[in-house]
Amino acid sequence: MESVNETRPRKSKSWKEKLTPLLFIGPHLFFFLIFLAYPTIYGLVISFHNWNFFGDMSFAGLENYANILWVTDSLYFEYFWTAFRATFIFVILSVPPLIIIPLLIAVAINAKPPGQNFFRALFYAPSLLSVVTVVLIWIWLLDTNAGLVNYYIGTLGLDAIPWLTRTPWVWISLVLMTIWWTIGTNMILFLAGLGEISDQLYEAAKIDGANKIQQFFHVTLPGLKGPMAFVLVMTTLASFNVMAQPQLATGGGPGYETRVLILYIYEVGFTGGNPRAGLAAAMSVVLGMILLCISLVQFKLMSREK
Amino acid sequence: MKNEDKMSKRISLIFLCVMALFWILPLLWVISTSLKPESQAISWPIRWIPETLTFQNYVDVFMRDDVPVLRWFWNSFFVATVHTMLMLLVNSMSAYAFSRLHFRGRDVLFWSLMGTMMIPPVMNLVPLYGLISNLGWVNNYAALIFPGLASVFGIFLLRQFFIGIPVELEEAARIDGASAFFIYWRIILPLAKPALVVLALFTFMANWNDYLWPLIVTSSTEMRTLPVGLAIMQGTFNIQFAKLMAATVLSAIPVIILFVFAQKFIVKGIAMTGIKG
Image (cartoon, rainbow over all chains, first blue to last red):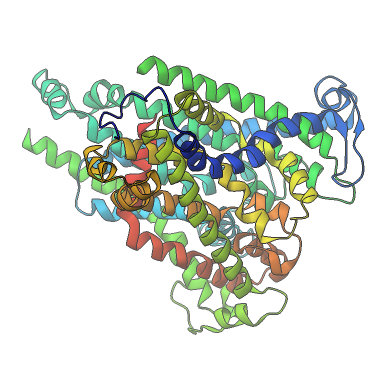
């Protein structure tokens, strides 16, 4: 007596039918509640306490937030904002090339030159590696004394560059290895977007006498609006989350120059004899709120398009 | 007009070749270094083709007691495999319910779950560690396998795919009195293979390459995963670059093999994730 038309649920169901959906969503929901919903709230709770992960929590009120946000003579205030500055510098320096370079590569591949599949595979390949592998490769390439890069700079008669120990070179190195590592994903998203642009638009532009560069600005770029918004937000979020590159390549140095927020959160919360979970949680919440705002902007953009 | 197309093809090719050099040379140099005796790795002038070709670095990497590379390989492999299988199971079950079963609040629940994708993972680092340490899971495979299963992205991906499968295909089975579980297991899952492969690839690679979480949640050398182990190696081997590069090459081999076989799926998968944007 099953109804064939399943689009509308029948009014009365047996307990068994009612239970079935719960059995299907239950396993995931179990993990979701324990490892995502609960920690999100627990994190807020921790941020209002002093805790070292082991003993008892002691209520600290707004102390942790105060120490990083408005008690300007606290050491944590200084460190937090130094870390914030480092993260910000990395975002500003890395996001533009992480969009422009894969865009140009995608446009070039989309012109269908010989070997296009090879190029696509090559530029994507490093994205498959772990960040540790990538950083190790670049530490070796950029080594001040024995590195390949400084060797060729030396053959030009120039002095060795302290890639991993001096400003501004540290920033260039961190951005360089990040570009090498991650452009693949954006490239493929752009390629997918380029495939969606109708040939007729290009034909029409040609008839109007537009050259290739004009076509790029008036047909290609407007046609990529959708993927562009997605790529921009995803790349910005990823850059805010940078941690392993400075941790492994520069140690956050010189001084605290490249000690980005997540690296600082890691140091405060998870290293040393007395981890400060409350402070680390408060910093995570502040950073999290910034990231959430970026996500919300994306959400707005997406829903406007639809 | 034909000429203009030829021209743009040529310019594209030149541009791609120049860029390709920046992507290929580091890889070649790493391989070259890993095949040199340590003494020649840092000798000037630079030699792209090793003077003495040796696999000793690869052997050495496996022989050292303080860097149990094989164990790290196993840890990463075991954890990523179990994590991926569980992810496929719980996500596909959930996606089936959200696309095929009818219950009150279904769509509200689904979109609420999707909304949590916006919660920045960094916010959960501290509390998740607190939870794991309360559970006594620090330095335990469980901490590397289970927390990631909370992710909702796979449900989104699979639900989109399930919706595209014609309902008629399961109608006959339902008339015969087949249970929801039978339909899910015997009809939907086999038809959803392409989407399942994509999800499996992404889940496996994300877990295999993960760095920060395993760094925090493991403490003994034997329990490290490959990326964390490699990072430790940097400290241990200090400036022994030839051995370090051999380890780097070894760590890359599994994902490269995966890529060669699954490139099409990966490309399709990324395009799929972009569609939601």
